[in-house]
Length: 389
Image (cartoon, rainbow, N blue to C red; front, side):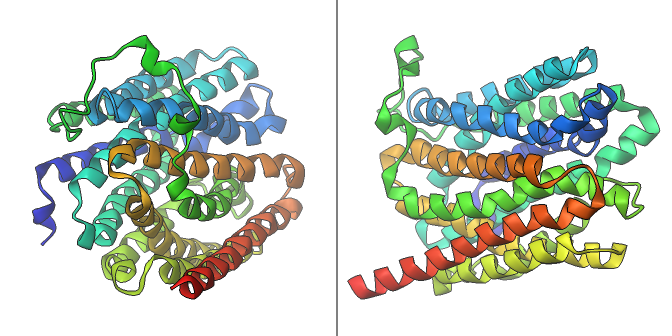
């Protein structure tokens, strides 16, 4: 059944797994890296700056995906990731390191946008939820495998070699993309011209996908908080592997996607998202108040359930809502919401977290409240749609 998605689908899935793993391998150790540079108080900027540049690049990557091609945009992002990761070891100050983090974000602004547009071209509408579930599983694998292995590699080989391995992983991702066939229609494809970099309002966002983007923004704040706080929280709990949370999470989310991949195709996107967001609220509160490795691991499992249900549903909903000739911009809009959410979540830790375990719960309360706002919005949107019909 899965094989029916075709060669392009699987090549892009494996490529994005490696691409995602490449920048997640280094993430668990970046808090310590910036601390060694003397920037302990700027930990929240590690994620924030990355997501700002990713968000800024989305309008360009979305427009270019719909003009010069999905494949070219994917390769641009991978090339940026490879080059910037090679430069991290020469960071001579906190601000140079943060500048590299800003540049690195452009890679995440390009490759996933082009890849999502390409995947949307491939998937049949009646199996979009299932296909996005598989697609999202590979992304989650990249996050989980990268973060769970990063600390082990650093302990065994050192930080510089960790950066080298991350760069090499990006190269392999790029090699796979070379074997992918372009899906942009020939009549829509244009040669690159600098005028394509001129952006207007319609290139920035696709209004038709706003409902999905709002939910994405509100729920993605939780990921931003988790990215910043879980490496330190693992240390507070005496867990040497700072990517422990993501190792447990990825196993959970994969199992959930295997069993719920077609759920949103059957009961609808909104009802499925209500289930996922409920699990998300519970997970945020449980993480914040975890005092043992067991409760922390349970929280990671519940977070995996939440994302395993919500993430593919949001991307399937975006694909449902996108104009067929603006899928790149539609995907870009969704990722802008994702990055904005991660940015707000990670930035909030600068105000709630003072590098002590006592303030950990405060950060996760912010995530729980914003996830609850997503729950309320979905109920309103569902009732509004029902009343309209």
